[in-house]
Image (cartoon, rainbow, N blue to C red):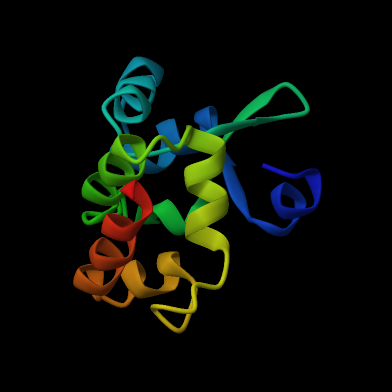
Length: 115
């Protein structure tokens, strides 16, 4: 992910997520490993985009989308960049569609990435 995009996305650190989710740091790392969240390292600090958090849990439709992007060959930083870039097929940023409850449109867009 480019430094410009990284600086435009609001993020949480692991300690902030520990406080928000009220879980141990290891649980946050498992969320990342199991694709419930995605993270990037910015200036040596692991960060998770704030848009990936809904209340005190990971955004529910995010995991399926991250898995689909992973299946299409996207690494975490590439998946995050794709989620935050305007998508012509969807008509907005995929992350905005997910947050608005329109996961089907996002999933259709991810299917075309594998080809």
